[in-house]
Amino acid sequence: MSSSNLMREPSGPLQAKQTLLLILLPLLSTFVVLRLYLQLVRVRHVYQGGYLVHHLYIGILLVLPAAFLLAFGADNRRLGLFARVALGAGSAMILDEITYLIATRATDQDYVSRVSFLGAIFCISLAAIVLLTLYVKFRD
Image (cartoon, rainbow, N blue to C red; front, side, top):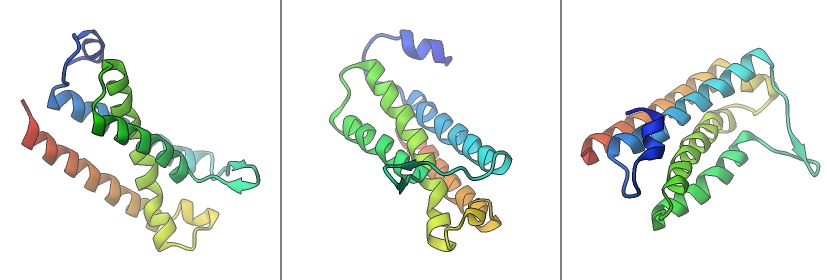
């Protein structure tokens, strides 16, 4: 199903395949963009009000409202689509930093370390497997 069909369909619940793609594609693409940025541009920290803002925090700011909205049901179809995309992108940001923050000393060099990279791949892969398992269970 093309992305243009997703936006033109009448209101109503999304099919399992649509939900899978709306979460999985942003999850994977956000992860790839983050990792390419870290490898090619190197670590560039964002400071807001003197505080270091990891993409983990931005991911949380995307995931929480999206999850709350989806938990209560999005009456507006476009809002529901946006929530699923935000859930995928935000999840990638969170999953990308888990190993970095837990298994390394969290230095700039650790961002681009093998441990951080392989841990991020593991976390993203696990999330993709969970999504695919849910898809199989709930597909139409």
